Image (tube, rainbow, N blue to C red; front, side):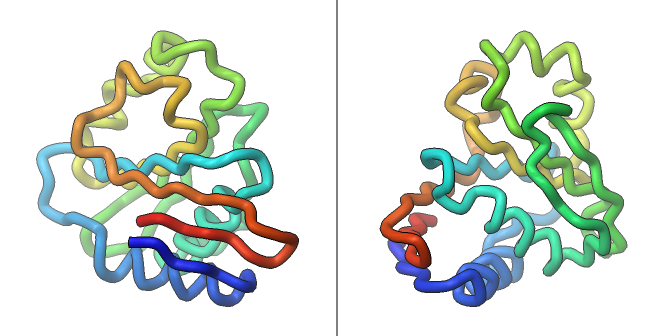
Length: 144
């Protein structure tokens, strides 16, 4: 489905709808979402909005230099939101060293990955893909 967002407020609503409708509970492994798109396309903004909907109180920023940030959730179905930025990674092996297998097998984890194409070889087949495209300063195309 293609949606046009003309503001951060609209992106927040799209993220809220995504959290409410798309999250798959009672899984055997983590719920993994891959955010595809160029720099400035809205990957982090979407993540921030979704994190807010999940009850994250902390400021969510892109983990570009630390690779991974973990946020505790007070949610009946999930315990952690794990935000990964794979932009600086050369491949999935680098993420394996950060405990990827352990976090990916935990069904109480939600994992948001920016730049998932850089680590595609270790991602599960059932990853939920979101494509974001910069249209202009305020407008983004979001494909869910």
